[in-house]
Length: 305
Image 1 (cartoon, one colour):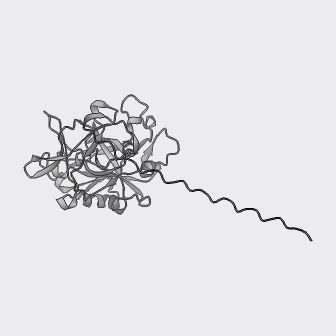
Image 2 (image 1 turned 180 degrees about the vertical axis):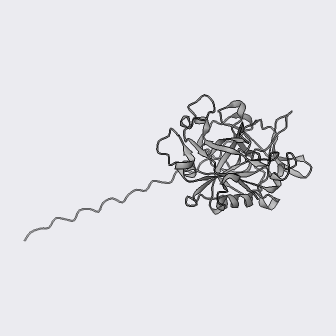
Image 3 (image 1 turned 135 degrees about the vertical axis):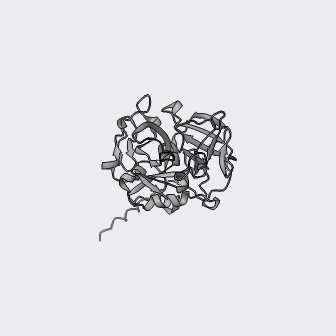
């Protein structure tokens, strides 16, 4: 008789790696105006917006790529567009009564190879995106500053068509689709807690640096009829308008957007932001939904809702 070989031992079971530990909360330190040193998700998602009105001016604002699924709490990669949160005065001129033209978004602009902002998109890490159209509130468009400060929020839409909207970028592997090349930020239209806040943006006086302030939030009446959110010691300047206010920021730069830089005083520091909370009367959620579904209006430049 012949003896058979014993069966080989079974292969070892794959050892699954434990999930990475959750990111720690960002240190809560009062900062008036400094360069953002932490990088992370929020730096990639925030960018500089360049635009004109009636072919005049090199206007500068800031904006943030936000999630466009589940009412702002998750990404949606199949809707054919990316959404940018910014301020209404970065989208629509309330004196001229018209939308911005030649609007361009440059995310993570601080990573430029240039010494200052320029229109060479090959200098920029992710390149530049042409902004397709804007959405603002009628409360902003039908009045003038400062009486319309309660409506100073708006959205830009970018079509997910890299052949017509994206230019440049020195990072390899770019898709040219904005919310694929950056991780969009969660937005909350029901945010109620007056929590420690990080406000960020591209102040022109510190071009091309990405700046921030961080502190507890309060409120202020800039006009008699509207109570703005307020960061009393924030020193961000012109160009930071439209940049994000973030709560629950962690060490990876992940958090929740609940307001944006809107206005400050000429003779003292401080930054005001509008409430985006629907239950407080904000129309931001309504504008956001319009931005998600509206067709491109062409030469009109956008929608007043």
